[in-house]
Amino acid sequence: MSDTIKSMEYVFADTLNADQLMIDDLIDVEGDIVQVVDIISLSDGYAITYRNDFGEVDIIEVGDYSTFKLYVLIDE
Image (cartoon, rainbow, N blue to C red; front, side):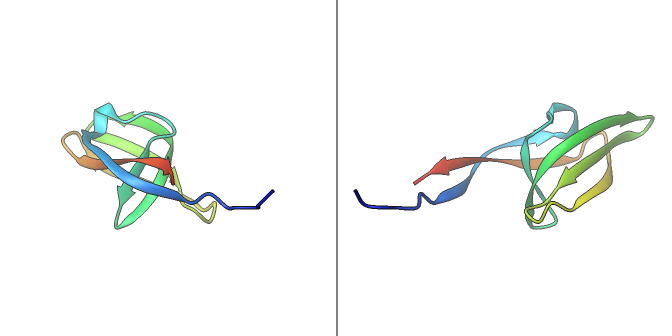
């Protein structure tokens, strides 16, 4: 039996508005693909909490019409 490591690759799936995002979505934030942890509606937009590959959590505030690239993980 051979031992192989499957590689995972991020693949662009769609572009979403901030109000279309869901918990656990993988999105591009400043060139890094991160996982959405929480979304809070504000009076003038959204506060999005996200986690990067290193487990670090951060928050960004965006306007109502901000868009994000959505990614999915694909086994190769």
